[in-house]
Amino acid sequence: MQIVRIPVLSDNYVFLLLDSRHKIAAVVDPAVAQPVLEKLHELDVELVAIFNTHHHHDHVGGNRELIEEYPKVTVYGGELDKGRIPGQKVFLHEGSQVQFGERTATVFFVPGHTRAHIAYYFPPATPGETGELFCGDTLFAGGCGRLFEGTPAQMVDSLGKIRALPDNTRVWCAHEYTLKNLQFALSVDSNNEDLQQRYTKVQACRNQGEATVPSLLGVEKRTNPFLRWDAPALQTTVKSSEPVQTFARLREMKDLAGSLNKNVERSPYL
Ligand code: ZN
Ligand code: FE
Image 1 (tube, rainbow, N blue to C red):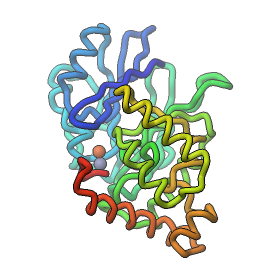
Image 2 (image 1 turned 60 degrees about the vertical axis):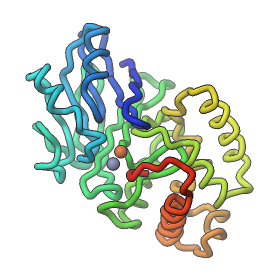
Image 3 (image 1 turned 180 degrees about the vertical axis):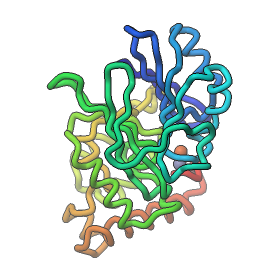
């Protein structure tokens, strides 16, 4: 399975999964349809599946147009998103399995950003290869999604499922927010050397206009404050020794930092 990253809108990523043997493709969170259609034509593959992680417009905005072009496409989403995802045919829950070509993904129910959010995890095809995680707006490179419809406890539980996956899992999140996320991360975890190094790398990457997605889950575990609710450094920062409270305070600080920083371009989904 090959994965093609398509940058769309101001900072979204749409991912195309390709099975070249069968000349089929699946798309994850098509914010818009046009660039996806162009890529499908260019590669001469048929779209058989739309995998949606949640109902926000910048993740499902292209569904309708894609269904018009490929009427046989199957639209997948979380069962609690019933009525909110255009064209949804399959209603998934924790532990559901979805098939694409010869690969099977396991579904994680990861509420928090929205109450219905799911993630798709393709385990490694052969030992030693990377697993692929499509986590929408739940986990970002260096950050996590805002809590629109869920509680900190839910989000810790959801991120905990992700954190339990192997370190060499590639994290295909839906936005290029990494640099700003790491700026915040440094403000709460300033002595973390892995984080300092990552920030330098990501800065260089962005200066070249390169994408920072996918990232590796092992790196996230060491540097992303929203996976580190039990790290002593972060618990000291927020003056708590309780995991959910630690996470909640970090998320509040991030929300506040975002709303105070008028110079930085902001997305409502950050
Ligand atoms: Zn969202
Ligand atoms: Fe989003």
